[in-house]
Length: 257
Image (cartoon, rainbow, N blue to C red; front, side, top):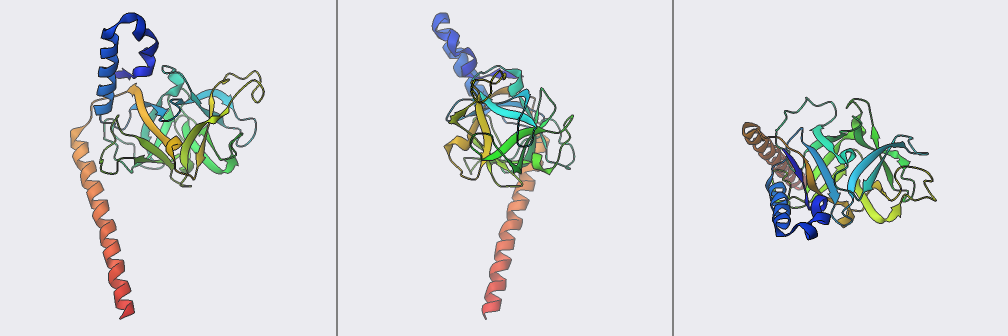
């Protein structure tokens, strides 16, 4: 199933009438209710700027020298699709297996086969925050490709299209970020194909510019049997954490006595 959110048809609504307004609302509603699974190719839009996570075939002139990750103010560019897959060195996840809030994942850029990546050794060109790039070959990369899906609504078990999410870099704890301050233009990127796009980086300061939403993508049926397993695993992990806190309390009390 392919879904396109409201930005993609906004310009044509005025001339085409109320039928398109209804269609736009229905598409948005269907995305919001859609459970998101492994293997889905998603389009992420920053909640504040409305720019889409993107990458073009151009490399940083400094820093890591890897492929640039930017934010683009267009809806239907195919280079803004990222496929959800298992974390580094984990077994391949089954297409349609629900993504759990708090899950460690990788995002593979569909157009290039490289992974969304961040390395504390390199700084973004304008903000000087932690650089975000594309890295790897044919989906292969390293541990710095891992991100944790944080759902803004902590009561949610599974990721849905309507969830506001933050992407936390698993190895450094920094959040995927873009804002309205740093734009590629003819002065800082003369003759390059990403004029008008925004810098994307990773920041330790968790704020509204770290919030993203799914506004389209390529979705598949959810495997409901896998959903039950995912819930069981999440509950098991939670119970283990709570038991650990309880055991620590007992040990502290025993030590005091």
